Amino acid sequence: MARVKLIEDEVIERPFNKDQFKRLISYLKPYTLQMVISLFLMIVASICSLAGPYLTKIAIDDHLSVGKPQGLQWVLLIYLMANIAHSICLRYRVRIMDKAGREAIATLRQDLFDHIQGLSFSFFDTRPAGKIMVRVINDVNSLNGLFTDGIVNVFVDLFTLFFVIILMFTIDFRLTLVSLSTIPLLLIVVFALKNQIRRRWQNVRSKSSNMNAYLHESLSGMRVTQAFVREEENEKIFLELNEDIKASWMDAIKINNLFWPSIDIISTVGTVLIYAVGLKMLGVKGVTIGSLISIIWYLGRFWEPLNNISNFYNSILVAMASTERIFEIMDTKSDITDSPDAIDMPEIIGDVEFQNVTFSYDEKKVVLKDVSFKVKAGQTIAFVGPTGAGKSTIINLINRFYDITDGKLLIDGYDIRDVKLKSLRSQMGVMLQDSFIFSGTIMDNIRYGRLDATDEEVVEAAKAVHAHDFIIKMEKGYDTEVQERGSRLSVGERQLISFARTLLANPKILILDEATSSIDTNTEILIQKALATLLQGRTSFIIAHRLSTIRMADRIMVVGDSDILESGSHDELIEKDGIYSELFKAQYKFLETI
Image 1 (cartoon, rainbow, N blue to C red):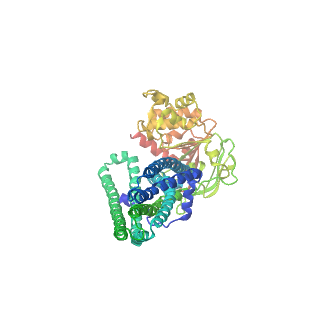
Image 2 (cartoon, rainbow, N blue to C red):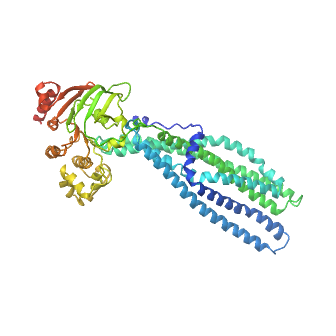
């Protein structure tokens, strides 16, 4: 059950933020014309709807009660036309605002996704993917009702409320005052229950966010779950989260079920008062059957917009919780950005230099301290050392996935902080141990390295890394569909496809981070032969625990204690009989025993 504690609930109590609300509404600004048209249609529809009770009064008082059927047909015709106009206006209003609202939502979601893609690694290091997905999907979707209905409807409801009161006072101000006497009771109920409703529905959203985060993590790690027989434990955790959602839903439903009957009772009390007072005044001081019926009818219309306005306020408060979560991410600044005077990186030659580079992920532990070395263009450099020594950190700094804490990192004499990120990274190729395969065809996955590559170039890249033979044996060859993370492929096959993708990009600097760790020995030998040709003219950095795979490197650097402890060719380091020599001998002896 301990895993549940790692999923923190969202903060429920949030003050209303006017600036963020204005920022949210700004996404509707491009659709101002559609909103104005929709507002006009809604006002026309409201007028047509409110005409019904007044026409009923005319029909009763001026025709039916006095026995004058002449002209009644015109009243009925106007009533029919008003209802038809009401239906047409509502139909087109829904169509216009639904389209505008969904486009605004799509723009907001696109902006959020674009911003997330530009965030640095440190952002993703501290946030589970499930929590980020909740922001992009659930939180953005929760604003749909506000964009498609809420903003326009609140103006219409205010207009309707004002127009209803005017019509009621026009018909009979005494009956109107009687009908409005229950408003104080309504306000007491609204203020007593609305905050409770808001808090409980926000709690529902918080629990749902926890569920989504845990579900994403569980599905992503299903192989590990089954391998370690953790199904029962995960079922218990899921049951606890599921029960939390159910309990929060029941709490919200209970308070909702208390609110609506209260409103109905208050409106019923108002209606009873109208009947009681109206029947006594009937025929006295101008009170007619038609005026009594129309007042009662308008009273029903009075409660509807009033309730809608209170609901709108409630929906605004709930929506602001999602809005703050969305803008929290959108306001998060990337640690890695282009400087104002950054220039495009010229075509990379491949000289790399570390000048007294110091780096730490946080202030507590220094990973690299005063590291200095030079690499000439076209050289192959290998990094070895224990886990956590800083090997991957060095290559992450070369790609500028993180910024150095102190010192300088130069490529061809350019400080990489002074050039544009896109121009830098577009000339580099990275092959990681965890080879990510996207949903799509094998052809598309390899072409991901260079989208304008021809089919022939894709095939040549696959042949170069010896992936071609196993690809053409699949049912559709290069057009074979693979799922996310390449579940149909073996680990070695996924790495070969990823290797082909990297080579197709034709990078000037090539980085291999444990890229051959899961490939069998025979395949590895073939790859080494291909690399002997393909790495010519490129600067390459290799991290490998199999020391046999890096013997051909121009220079091998032993990383440890936040520095480069040894540096030289394989033969030089063996002759030196230092740390590398001990590592190589120990690994050689281990391989002899298996």
